[in-house]
Length: 271
Image 1 (cartoon, rainbow, N blue to C red):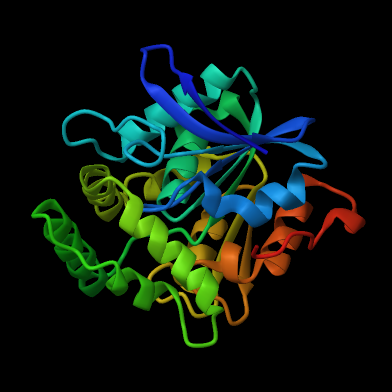
Image 2: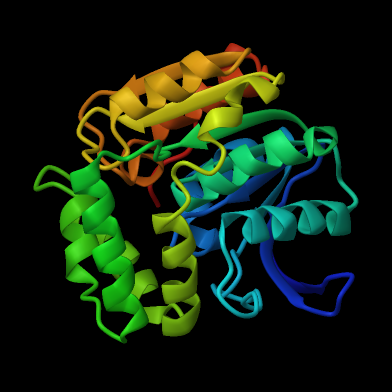
């Protein structure tokens, strides 16, 4: 597993973790996280796949996008990053904001991928949820925001405290401006590609946790129903950080999505 920084076609920095060999698997994390948030999946799939876990713009080693970027700007960035890797077509998986970006790539750049996985995605929030997420975006833009607030939404008392502490460390380490800009795009992005799901023709996994109130099972099921090759999975007992708290269940579904043999499923832990 190697952490590195590349230069894109326009000179910007791209931070990533690279591991393994074989068919390419690209991973996009959520707002406030970093490529290391995919550690259980990198460990599980590097023996069979060439894994690229990318830092989103304004996170880790990746330069932030200029101005006030919206979701399509992050989609264009992801498409350029995949091309810069020279690895396409890829299997593309994203978590939360990364899932919105991955869906956008599947809609706008279908030639770059052969399958897509959306973990804990959001989809057409109701009025109450929309008001709450837009309020959080305004707080972050004004320099506010308490890392304990997302941790309270993402974790329950049943989740391992060391995982929660690790995620809290990433939230505290992220560049505040990069976090705020990306969160604003996330807050406004739940409906951008919601009406274009039928354009996605590749195999698609849509997964969330049964206890994820903001990326709900109903959202995952609605997305999967609109995709020609969509399959929805709800992980019992999991919340928003299912890939970290329930890696065996998540990895088993990702292995099935990737078409790996049964003995490759369920590997990886939360370490």
